[in-house]
Length: 483
Ligand code: GAP
Image 1 (cartoon, rainbow, N blue to C red):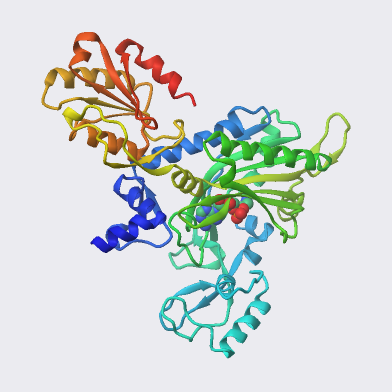
Image 2: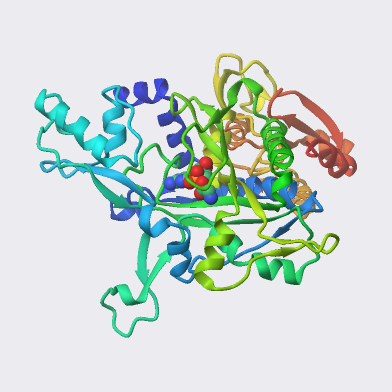
């Protein structure tokens, strides 16, 4: 037990995973059946945080803009969609299996552990390098140490099922794919959007939704999972505007991270040197994950040319051009996209917000409040992202007059903010609990509140306490929670 605690103390990822479970942010899927690899569930606070991140993205990408509209397309699409997009023929990773312990590995990542950089598409190169390591007796399973590893083979990341089949036996004839990215639905609704809204080039279509990839390795908690959510925006434009708009979106997305509390030192750009055949430019925003030991991709910004619309036009037989009413010119718009994983952002925000610090303030100590020699764990999330905005406490649980007043305040505030009522344990414990879930303000109702009509409002980050009139609480909190 002591050993477990000490690893957790030193390991940022274990600390984060433990907080997520303890406080109901994230649970392993199907835990009572022993878990289900690469899939996670979100508890009460996790769901609230995820919704707030979604809203933060949606408001900046759609609500505050005149040139982006929304979409919510279905997960299932005509299977030809994925033939046209190239996913069926080439959305795969090179896989190696250990014949002894049955572990599955990404062959390119295995080579990387020997300092060999391999492009995941070049299977021949990968197998030659694996052979060399095998001959030198260096190739071993990183899990069990066996030297009995298979050759690298292509492994499709597409998740397949059947729909509308006459029997329940799986058949290729009735194949259907769970979308591996959300943008497919955007391309298929390009024409519907142009015909039904008043959009003019350049314009974007944004959507948030589930995507599925049969990842060979789904470790690192929620960083890479088999079921996840993407937030994607496809911006349709005249190719002459690509450079200007690409730079514009790079700046917009960069600023979004700063707006929600990331430091400039913790994010950076990574330019893709090797591009997909249709792409002319690709940059990632990377965040310096403490829990993953360094910078990793969170978002991709890609110039995709006219490839997607041309392919879907070719495979569907439908014209997907744009008529410029001013010039009379007809052409296939080019596309640039911003694409980010919601769950990956969730991990990024938690990683960035999780702080352990000594408690300095000494107040309410008579009621078991904050004392000097403690360490507190606090999630210093941007207030707009915090799952619970305000917690309301009666100082003492066994004083009905305090509980009644606190309930009254809570019932009033909960119609305006996501609030929580807590009368469990002493006030110090309640603060610790709210700190761990990132609640920006805690309100305590004490005996003075009954006489003077004011309450203590305690700030999560500074731990400073102010007396605020009950009548002014709503305006006070509205102002404080704006940003
Ligand atoms: N439409 C472009 C596209 O899907 P991508 O680089 O494959 O591009 C974009 O994915 C983003 O989606 C990534 O930067 C990451 O945030 C997220 N993502 C991709 N695969 C993921 C996975 N298996 N688990 C969690 N997030 C993932």
